[in-house]
Image 1: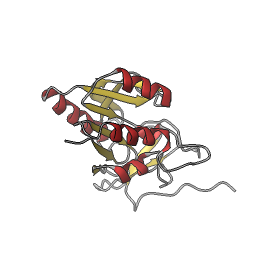
Image 2: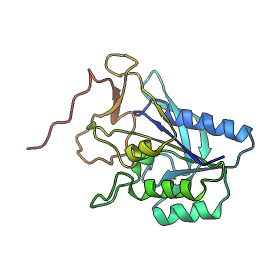
Image 3: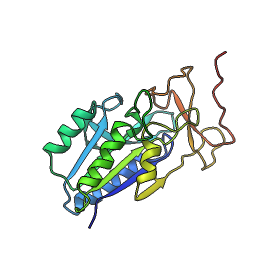
Length: 206
């Protein structure tokens, strides 16, 4: 019996949250105590995580959802974790937790907190499941996710359907709007899933 970390990664619209919710339903069926968190930076869904399907008209529709607690910073993370008893801790959209400025390591405060929690509860059956984007729109490592992949016990890397050629090889969230900031919350109107062949690197400003 030991604590363990699972990480689910992939581009937008690849089914990460759907996979996470499926794991949580299974844990609930097994009568495990589940606690779900998500970064407050993700303003698309406040107070819950949701899996969505892309409809024929290009819109998205929620197919399943679970209540979640919004995390603003490291202090609020530990307040939530220390006040609640749980067997499974799930965090969605974890790429939105920022790294240190200047950069201290590949984990940031969130990744270090997860590592600390795993160490502190190493003699328990604590299960932590983190879902998020492993790459940003420019093919760069995104937030604490790459660091968490390094310390994970299990990794699932999902792909989506390329919205240009239709191949089942979508690996990156291509940004269709002109904004070079890494943290830009968007949806199907601002991003597309693309395969490597159809992906176009963003143009660097002169």
